[in-house]
Length: 101
Image (cartoon, rainbow, N blue to C red):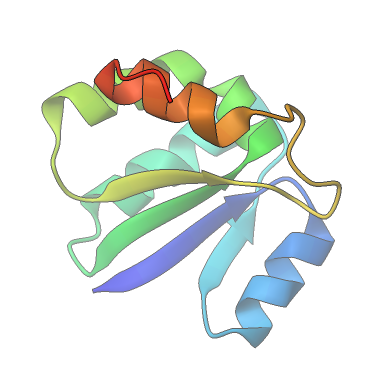
């Protein structure tokens, strides 16, 4: 299975392409949703990577997809500016499985 990136940042897209991961640049909400839908329909894609800003634009839709679909896995990655919150990983674990660490 392949990974696929939806990014709002050209630098992140270029870096991932250098690592062998294809993707698209999408900045507007409608474009992001269209690309997400295309990626969801592509059975060769097992992991969809979203940059933080892209995820923020379509947060509710991503949560709905995660609740009803097992594949592809949708993962948020930092862009070149890094994670916004200092305790992002612990907060994510707490929200995902309800365990405080």
